[in-house]
Length: 266
Image (cartoon, rainbow, N blue to C red; front, side, top):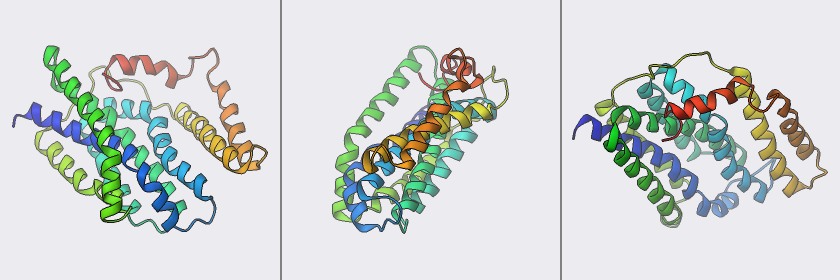
């Protein structure tokens, strides 16, 4: 296997693990809420946090992950994301309570945010022209296939073993992806990577998304007059002034440049 082909399959496997984990959990949620004790959240509320917390952690830091990939190296950030995803998956498989599992799911999402932009950047750097178009086609097709297979695989794991297998199955896949990354992927940075980390923009974006997510779930499950829903939605609303004029914040201004640099999307 050539280095370019190995890089493509490492990128597909890495991002595939992230996409798989967003779909494989759906059929395991009833069993998880039945088996794990919950001390703070209710059953339906906990299930909502388990699913949406993962998506929240991934989406809130996706743009930041693109900057880290540009500035600190594609292979390094991709490897870091894989290692963190494997560790959080292992801990999720042994979570003692529903609240702990929710926290670990958010960490899984954060780790996934480091993997997906890195996988696209690896493909972009390794291929050009028509070969790049074909490589992105393979990457997209594999991602769509994983999304289709996810629920069936999750049901099989839950019925044959336990809901914990839904998380533990990620660990050997991560090890394979790490081996392929070390064997085939070369380090590289974006030649035009510049600027500094926009910490305020990143924090405010994460707070806005978290407030909206928590407020919507808490309001639906506990009532819209519940203090937790009111506070969370107030936090989400208060973050809006951080972008006067719509797109003046450094984090928002950097988005078109990140996209055009193929760090976020093909």
